[in-house]
Length: 448
Image (tube, rainbow, N blue to C red; front, side, top):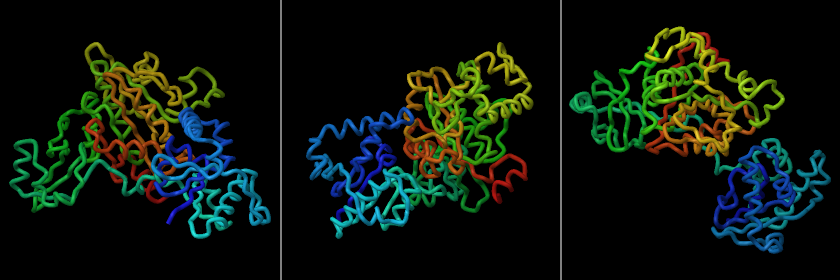
């Protein structure tokens, strides 16, 4: 049965081809008030760009036909701009709605009355508007095309619970690799390139940790490297350090998910300091600072001063690293105060909203709190990478501060799901039980 989708602006600007993602035999209706909103849209650079692209796409059609019977899109679906359709059921409602809501709800009701045998669905990312629509008997949904799996089903970059024979285990230890077909439940696993593999011998006497390189399970290359004297405290941190220590040539993109206290930022900074200045000339640190990343002008000082309050965690981690390390390298002094690195420019702060146009060379770029970055901004960040740079995206999908995002729809999950399996992308998710903070912090995270 054909469906009629009434698409509001917040869902429409999720992608520049949203109207083509709603099936090839459905009717997609854009209320005229939405078109007006697109014309005057003010938001992030990427969202504003998408709004303009959608308007340009609408102009490729016969506008008179588009606003009347509709036009056929290249995938076969019909697209129409609906003008004002008022409904007495809406105007007589006991609920108070804004003018925009009245017009959009009126269009939905009009379409329901005109097409009783077809399902009319309002698409909006605004949960309150979905609730209001439901009270009026209008079916409303989020734009599902951009929704990724539930938190527990998202790609973790690791698989465990695998078994092999004792001879296969001996072969792995002696040859440093193993054909995945020698794993007993080989056919049950979705083998994804760069996925970490934890397996045991059949009697559980031996265990091993490896990485699937696309053809075989290989042993970890950096197990005996301890950046700034740091030793991994659990299996998760072993995988994390493997991702971080792998060079930019083979692993220019690293995605790390995990709850607070699992060592994401700490290990990333330690590796950056260890690799300067031979591999990387600087460490660049970025974190989202508000709903609209460009709006930091009201804060005093230069860019560094404006963003600095949001990077307290970076400074805390540096202090711990220097306190534990107290080491020196030839021609490169490890100052016990992290301020030296900021003052000398070895560690720089980069507001995410000011990345456009930059080319980042010979840099370890740490993007913290990526779960609060809009998916539409991820592409503009990753495409800044140039020769010699490694980009590390950190975050916890369950800790969302941006009201426009959730644990299934955010920049971190978007990047993880889109890039999984790419040979240049290494990923790992650290379990809650792998937190290295105090017992109190661990218990509080679970119970509060």
